[in-house]
Image 1 (tube, rainbow, N blue to C red):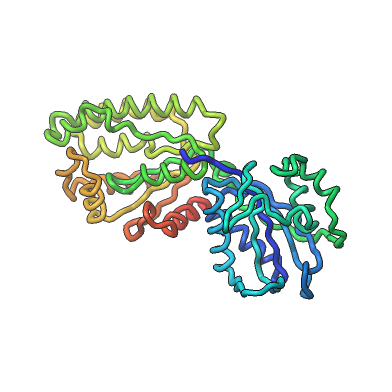
Image 2: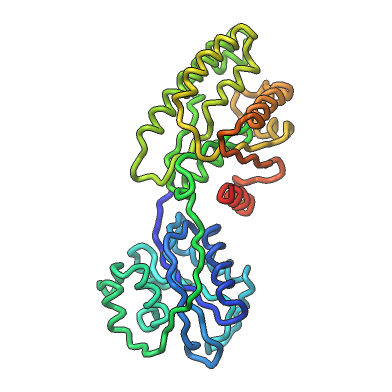
Length: 374
């Protein structure tokens, strides 16, 4: 699990549609930096240090898994994405967006690229007023005083006015969902995505314990003989794991994410078992299914068969190397049959055949936005 940090950012704009500029920046910060926990009111002030249009300013509290240097790098890229054009000048300039890192945890940082706490924040009312609104009791790491006390000593006499416009704080995943299940065919990337989401959002991770199943290697060698004990052992283990983990929620985690849902037991059993075995298995499954907590969001990752076979080969599990394409197609058909008949699940299907969300940040953000918007 990645360490989570709290950072405070200052945003300003004095060109174009200023509320829209701030909202776009907020949305990109949510996508690329971390979960937006608080946003201040908008404050209007005269331009600082040069003659220009009035500024709209806000401060934000963000929870992030990025280190301080990466936060700076990311907010600078967001400025660039929003059209900020930096010029080499000794004086301040008009800008459509400006993002500064004010505080990062309780750290004091002095480097060539970043100074934290921001060296000029205490002297700027357009920073301190919105910052105190969202974090009045936060201790300044150098002054060792609460920010609300620091504001009282601010020498800036500029007029600052609250703007009667409201910005939208992007909802955190933990506010939308208590439990997300990521599903997909063999090799679709469900465990990879579950790990990425868990790391970013401090979620409790529930991973299928397939590696501990003694019947799995035997099944791939002799499917007819070992299909029933394999499916029964998986069903029992999944039921026990989900029952225990979903019941014992960790207060230090924001939500739960799993790389499987109990219904996959029935999907695989339908493919691997004979008719009589399946009917017996279905009776056991129906009893168990009633007791399992349903996910708030069920995400199905679709990958085409060729990509699945490539992924299976690359991850190198010996007992999977003889999996055939027709077996994967049957599994996919089973999932499709399940998805098209479920009316009580919040379902999201995403085609990931042409993207690489593990190694490409933009592809991962694409998936994350899909999940946020579901």
